[in-house]
Image (cartoon, helix red, strand yellow):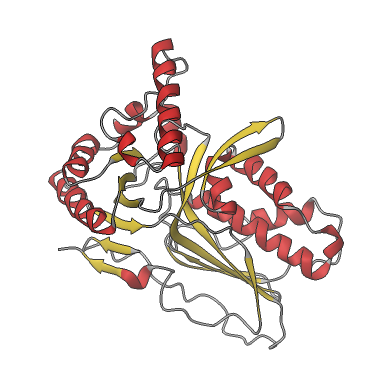
Length: 357
């Protein structure tokens, strides 16, 4: 993963130093999970398609009291450090729904975030999935007869997030087409061509999903619905056959992207710059403001990153750019020995950041 960051944005990845320095017993149960960023919609796959990317939030839970939450990296100055934290809420939700009285509720949680917050890269889905998996690890350790299945975890993740497009790839890795049938999420894996690489350009302003949904129309013309159906089929064919050239020229979306781009200054100009620099196509990542450029090599993706950065600067907007491989592996919890390390130099991926010129 290659990452570029603008000068003057030093508040990212500042370590939090509020965690207790007390030492834990060497045999204290400790679990770690790395949950990937995700890009939802993929253009015409509104609320039903998504894929996992090679950028992660790392979460470590150590079973010892008193309860504490330590946050560093992305969102360190924004995210709560009590039981209202999204990861903690996901853990508590599983335990509340599980008749296992002996599972401890006092633990030390360390969150090292590499995924930008409110950027359209699935930070909330990462928190939910990570919390659910950590809760299941606690059940496996203290009440194995009550351990949840992956399908049960996915169904609860969809219920908590509201739609499956981010949480499915966050849990299962890869690319997915997901539909909700009643209360159960049905997910179908999509192939990812080996050549596919992404440039994620993250402008330095947040865009809440709620605000991005508010601008969507309540009804669309029939011709737009038909056109979008064809585009979704086109995307599925390109992924399934590896013919990425099918996404060149005329590929896009009419259900959500035209309305959301209006909330992002310079979006159209940055999109065109990415195409001129060699990108196959571009899509909004989730609700935005991150713009995802689809490329066929890391070299092209790096050139695209430079051009996207330059054009956004013409609008007085700085941005981070990440050159990312798809993440194909399923997300699983590691069982670790010994206490959580007291210090960590940076969030996952942060050491790879350099200042763009």
